[in-house]
Length: 194
Image (tube, rainbow, N blue to C red; front, top):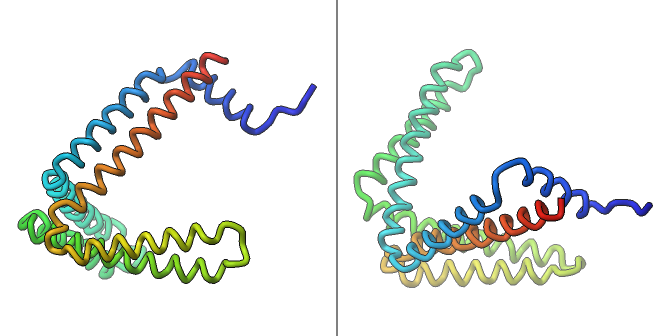
C-alpha cells in the first residue's frame, strides 16, 4: 500500500463533501454570474464606479453606527472614547460619500493612486532586501507595476476617477468568477471520482 498524498486526500475530501452537499452547478452558475457582472462593470465603468463608491459609503456609515453602539454596550472594557470617535469618523465618512458621490469618487481615486505608490515602493524595498532568495524578481516586478498603476491613475486624475474603481471592481469580479468556475469543475470532477 502506498501512502496517500496530501493532494489525493484533499481531492477525496472535496469529492465526499460535494457528493452530499451543494451541487457543483450552483458554484458554476455563481461563477458565470460573477463573470457577467465583471464584464458589465468593465463595459460601463462609470456606473460601476458610482456603485462601488455608494457601497463604500453605506459600509462606512453602517460600520460607524455599529461601532458606536458596540462602544456603549462594552463600556466596562475601556477605550470607549476612542471607539466612539472611530465610529463617529465612520459615520461622517459614510455620510460624505453618500451625500456627494462625485466628490467621493474623486477622493477614493486619489487615495487609490497614493495606495499604489506606497505599496509599490514598499514592494521594491522588500524585493531588494530579499535578493538572495529565489524568485525575488517577482516581488520587484509587482512593485514596479504598482508604481506604474499609481502613476497612470495620478497622471489622468481627475479624469481617471470616471473609470478606475469600476474597472478594478470588474477585473476582480471576472477573476473571482473564473476561480469559482474552476472550483465548481474541480468539485464535479472530485464528486465523479468519489
